Amino acid sequence: MLRKKHPGNNHQTKKNTTLSGATQTGASKMNSDRGRAATKTNIPLTKQAPPATTLTAAPTPSTSSTSAARTPPPPMTPDQAQVTAYNSRRRPTLDHLPADRWWKLFIDSKHHGEAQKTEKPEAFYDNDKSPGYSSAIMDVFDNVLLSDGPHFKRRLDAEYYRFLHEKVTAGVTINEGGKQWSEYEDGRQTSFGSYDWDSWPTGDTRAYGIREADVKAAIEEMRREGLIYTPDDVNIRKMSQEVQDRIGVHLLDSNGTMSAAYRPGEAEKRVKAILDRYNKEINAAKTHDAALAAIARTVRALHVGHFFRDANGRLNIYVVLNKLLTDEGYSPVILPYGPEVFGGMKTIDELVKDIKDGMDAFWDEVDDARNRQRVQ
Image 1 (cartoon, rainbow, N blue to C red):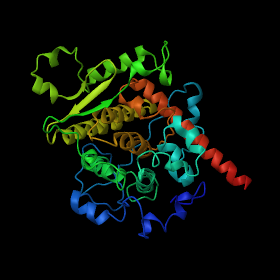
Image 2: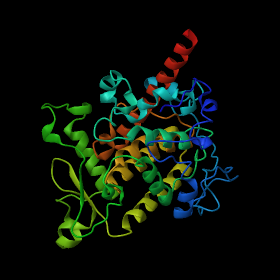
Image 3: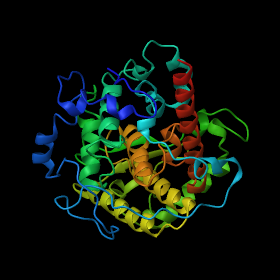
């Protein structure tokens, strides 16, 4: 059930829901699971004050569970209409958006029109073979993205990343294998589609306004970054088939089918390496563009890495992306396109533009909610 909120002060009206320990149904609630999760993962699940100094290395779970305060970067050079998202107004948080509009953050924009026609638009994917989808994400939003949530600005590391995956799939109808790391076992791999070029409309500009050259540029960028290997890669052709099968993320064909096959324990190590790199990049960022590029690069690496057998999109795009943005003082996003664009369809520069558009869209939604509230 949606939590009732009022724009501008939404978090104050939810005290008797998830965080109060009231009776809950549907997906497993994050707060009611705190004790069990803490025992399982050894992560303190209570809110702590941020450390006084900037993080320079990954802290141990027992000593730091929030992101350190960081001096915000100076205003970026205005680029077209995007400047309003950064300078002219105080950046909104999820607190400013009524909960009955949260669904626009976790339902793909291309489905907003259809979802809006239903009685419960937030349940649009629940009705499409994923019962419990909206309840699980709403609970994670409550705890992670609201400023009074016990996980607000909690530092993201590999262990917490897995914990968030557990919570975003809690109570959702999904086979248990889909909740596991994408590890290679008994010849089993996890294949997924990055893009399906042949199924798109013909012409220079295709789905999402992306040209074939744009996708090729993104693939090359990911190869340089070491995210993927392709059949044409000289290094991979020198390896045995067994090694190739376990190489990690391997682009299998020209239609964008990828395969993730990690050795036991390797997926978690790769997540740690990605997040360690992110900490260095975000601390070194001096401009908004640099900070947003660090966030986009991290989310793309996690999404292309496909570290779980299912629910990677809802975890990486709807939860982790919004968490990293709010950690750095940016607003959440209502992205113009779905999770697919983070799976190898766009370069980092293009993804940053999508994030900016997504922040503008979130602003518009907050403003609309405020205006309607005043009219009432």
